[in-house]
Image 1: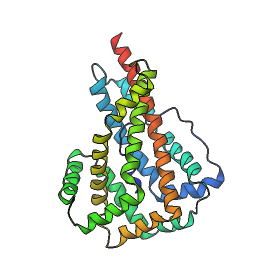
Image 2: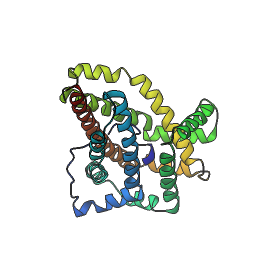
Image 3: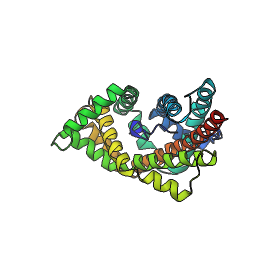
Image 4: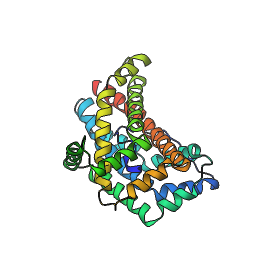
Length: 273
């Protein structure tokens, strides 16, 4: 599930490195078992590529060495991870952690995590992502049993809707950064209108990506493993995990999106001088 959290490239800065109290260590143990440090590293690589795209699309003359350095500061891996850890600890609260640790440190759990990380990293290549999307579209609407198992998992964890909300929120924060940085003059209602105008397209793209990713990642799993994972997701602990993960990554992406908007605004103004 962790690999299917928040694909959107726009992500944060200006987050203090919090020192988590000792009582939070089991939660960090769970995040480690889930491969969160590795997925944050992959997200940073995705973000650096996104920074190049932003420069090409929005900054006259494209990116410079200074822009690249700014993007590297925004996508500070330690800060990104600290944000996820802090918010996860808060949102997970006193939910039961032992069943989750037992599952994700087991051979099956570690296989799932490894497959998700491998698939997420592989889909950084456009050709692989396109092939994964095509494979899903070939199955979509059929009576495929693997697709049915994935659909149950997606619906149980509300992955499409949660990713959609995360993407729209990140887009809002990016526009807000542009406005606060002086590149745009838009009211809050105008920003919301602009962001929500892309809801239908974003929802369709998000659904296709989530299914493509999970079908690719979970293909090597033995029969019944996805169903077992889905049952864990239905438990109180599983729901707490899903909620806390999205809260942590949402915060991370919102912070980065705002920082990127501010950075683009500054770069645009420098180029105009």
